[in-house]
Amino acid sequence: KNQVEQSPQSLIILEGKNCTLQCNYTVSPFSNLRWYKQDTGRGPVSLTIMTFSENTKSNGRYTATLDADTKQSSLHITASQLSDSASYICVVSGINYKLSFGAGTTVTVRA
Amino acid sequence: GAVVSQHPSRVICKSGTSVKIECRSLDFQATTMFWYRQFPKKSLMLMATSNEGSKATYEQGVEKDKFLINHASLTLSTLTVTSAHPEDSSFYICSAITLAGASYNEQFFGPGTRLTVL
Image 1: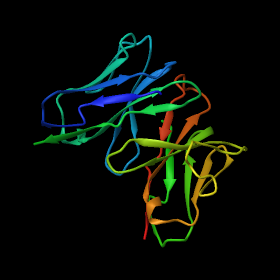
Image 2: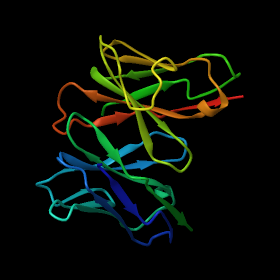
Image 3: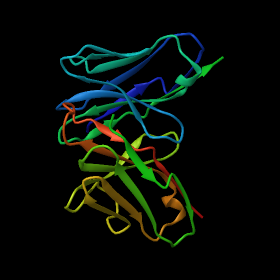
Image 4: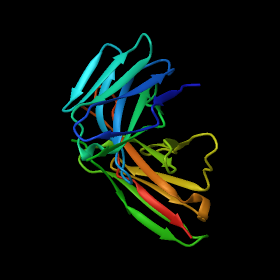
């Protein structure tokens, strides 16, 4: 069974600090890995997408890494802002557009 | 960028009634749309895959007669929750795949519809 596991489940950080979220997956065959940001009561918004040949990708203050050998990914948030408070979901794409979703990490940024 | 809209954003209905949720791709054509359900603090669960002009493919455990899906055009898919019950209360999210330009088969998600069945 294809699985995507994220850690931690939730975290609280102070505004301006950095944090790193983790994602481990067992999806095979692997097409790409995406990180989404989901605000409460809203749909997910794509942050980064990486194929197996890409090790890192940035989108502003968000930097994702991918190790296809160990099947691990991370999302690093730099200089966090209050607006970064959201759920961050790791999603792995296999074949036929099927997506495997992680449970998400809830990030709370406090002033 | 590709924009997907949903209507309504929130709906409250009485038990036993049917509710229709629309999913539209606003600036692109989508051959395939997906319907997800999300419970509080849980991840998205795929309910069905909707292809334009053909019957939807439902995931295991999803009742076809309960959740009717119609994909009549390349920009519109609808989900109808028939004879809704309180346990159908949830956050429903659609997504769409653009025909061209996306090398990653990226899915663009709608903003979601909050359904509350009284």
